[in-house]
Image (cartoon, rainbow, N blue to C red; front, side, top):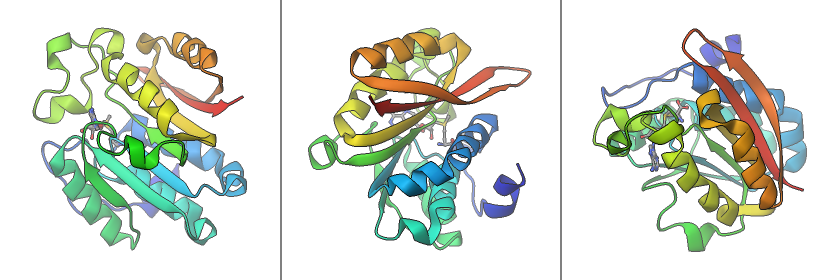
Length: 214
Ligand code: SAM
């Protein structure tokens, strides 16, 4: 989509920070395709876990624009270089989010419990040996352990805790992550789901799944 090229300029990069790729674009396209519903939802607290370069959270803030007046934005990343690059991306676009260098939402659960209306996640989802998960460096951006589920399976219970009753979660998954099993697992917790964007590249088949309380 031309939106991603036209709207977001990355003013800085770092060898250990994930550059926006097909998965980032698919996530932004999913949010864009649901923009009218998001505007109706009027999310008061929006959050991204794993913000990387800041491409997704900055796109989200720009697409909600003035109509999200009063909304608060928070983004976390376990990689402190990502926090710095996201800060620079946001500054270049005149938007602001609270940025926190932490593991998923560690230290924020009590403060944010039940209050996040919109949560977006492009997690490390690539199947890798388990010992590659959470290593220093750029590998932590994609290394997802067995079936690519290690970090996803840690994020889901945190998402349940943080989401408000009307909250929506958009998450990137790969076929290898077994998205239908993830949807069944979330259904047991009371969440409906649908695939908002499905995209196949030479290397992978991506699904952007939206979850909401049924
Ligand atoms: N959201 C960005 C995008 O779509 O371009 C980056 C996505 S990249 C696939 C995954 C991001 O999650 C990386 O920036 C990585 O540092 C971060 N990450 C990995 N494990 C994490 C964790 N346990 N807690 C927070 N962030 C994590």
